[in-house]
Amino acid sequence: MADISTIYKLSIIAFIYFTNVYGTSCPVLECWFVQERPGRGGGFPAAMSQEKSLLYINTDPEWKRPESQQRPSTDINPDRLYYITDPAATFCSSSLHPPEGSVQKPQCEINPFMPQPSSVQWTVSLTDSAHSPIYLQADWYSASLQGLNGQLSLSSVMRAPTATKEPAVLLSVSSRTPVVRSRLGERVVLDCGFWAEASSPLSGSGFTVEWRYQFRGDGRLVLAYDGKNDRLAETQEKGAELDFTALHERGNASLILQEAQVRHSGTYICTVYLPYILAQVAVELEIVEPPSLSIFPSPLPLSVPGQVVTVQCEASGFSPLSLELHWELMEMDGNVRPLGQGSVSGHRQGPDGTYSQTTRLQLDSAKLDLGRGGEVTCVAVHPGGTRRARVTLNVIGVSAPSIEDSMAMVAVALCLYGLIKVISWTFISSGSEDAEKKAK
Image (cartoon, rainbow, N blue to C red):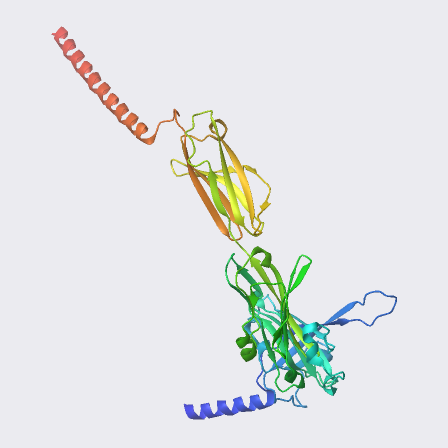
C-alpha cells in the first residue's frame, strides 16, 4: 500500500508544476468574434462578420504562456484563440460555464475596441491632457457576456501587446441581477460593480459612474458621479443615490431607488469610465403590483328564478398592463364551474401610473342554471399573482329538493314500503284462514 504522505507530496509537486506551466486557469469560454467587414464605399452601412473563437482564461497577472505550449486541437482559426489574463476572475463565474453536455450556453461576444476620450461633461476631467499616452498603442478588445439563467451580465475592456492575442483585463463592469422585479413602494437596489487593474496607467486618474434610463424610446440621465473630483452631476431624478463608501472601497456602483414607482420600469444602463475607455451593463427593472379586487353590490340581493342580478368586479392599482379577469361559481355541493369573462371594460390609468379594469356579469338563473345559488368568485390572473374576491348568491323558490329533504323523502318512502308489506301480509294471512274454514 502506498504511503499516504508520499502521495500527498507528489500531488503538491504536480499542483506546483501545472500552476507554473498553465497558471491559475478557468474553463475555456466559447465566444463569437464580431467586427465590421472592410467597407466598399458608396455610403452603405458596413456588414458585420462573426467567427468562432475560444477564450483561455488565467487569473495570475504574472503568468506567461510558454512559447513551446502546444496549441489546442480545434478547427477554430488560430487567430481567434485568445489567452486572457483576468486577475479579478470575473470570467471564471460559474454562470459562464455550464455543466458538460448542457444544451444551454452563455452568450459571449468579443470585438475590437478603440480607446478615445469621452466628450460627456462629467468625464472630461479624466482626460485633461491633450495627448494620448503611448500606452494606448496596442491591440484593444471589448467582451460582452451573459450568464446562464440571467445570473450575470459582464462587460470588459482588454489590452494586448500588439499581435500577441494575449489581452489583459483592465476594466470589468458586471451585474449579478440583470433582471429585477419589485413591488410599488419598495426600496430597490440595481446591482452594478466594477473592477479596474490598479497597475494600469489608466487607473490612476480617477473614474466616473453614470446611470441612464431607457424605455420605449424615452431616455434620461438618472445619476452621474465624477469620482475624480467627488462631484455629482445635477439631474431631475429624485430618490436615486449611490453608496459612496462602497463605491470607493469595493467598486460597488449599484443604484439605489428609495421608493419604487411605475415610472421606474425600464432599462437602466450602468457605465463606468476610465480615461479613454468605458464598459457598461444593462439592468432591467420591472415594477409588478398585483390588483386589488372589489365586488359590487355586496352582499347580493336575494334572487328568484327568472330574475337577473348584475354583479360587477373592479381590479385596481395593478401594473404591468397584462390582466385576465373571469368568474366562477362554487355551488352548494362544493362543485366549481366557470361563468365566463363577463363584459370586460378597457384599461384606465391612474395618476400613479397603475391601471384599473372592470368586468360585469349578469346572473340569469334561467340561462346559467344557478340552482339554489352559491359563492360567486371574481378571479384576476396577473404576473404579480392571482387574486380572488367572493360574494354569496342565494336563489329562493327553487323546486329542487335539498339533501336533507331528499333524505327525509327516502325515509318516508321506506316507511310506506314497510307499512304496505305489513298490510299485504295481514290480508294474505286472513285469506288463507277463511279458505281453510270453508274447506272443512
